Image 1 (spheres, one colour):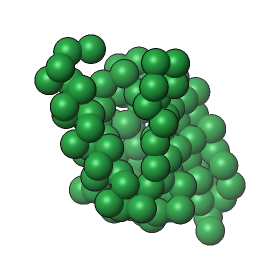
Image 2 (image 1 turned 180 degrees about the horizontal axis):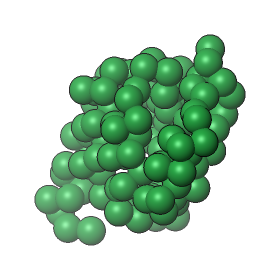
Image 3 (image 1 turned 90 degrees about the vertical axis):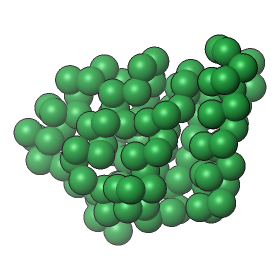
Image 4 (image 1 turned 180 degrees about the vertical axis):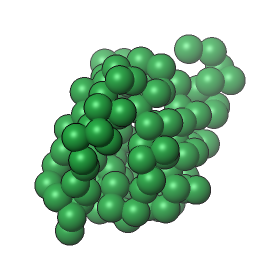
Amino acid sequence: MTAEECRINQGLLDHVEALGGGYVWDAEVFSVTLMDVPLEDDKAIALCGLRGVQQIALDASRLSVATLAALAGIQGLQSLVLAKRTFTDNQRTELGRFGPEIIEAGGEG
């Protein structure tokens, strides 16, 4: 990862903390969590700028499928944990085609 990518990541992670979320970013794990923060699309889409992130876990109750698809498309993302949201079979298929494991962590909350 370049110094510029690290700088961008740190700015985005500062944004995550300001929203009430958290993260782990070390040599072996890079995970972001916003499970207790009901985000709107405009706040969540910024996470697409992260480089090297392995897992994102968030409250998806207010997010559009388009935003979730954009997040699922982050290069190298291994899993996307989505809480407080239920999906149709078509939506699951759409999200699943991007590659990371999609984990539904509970329905509407």
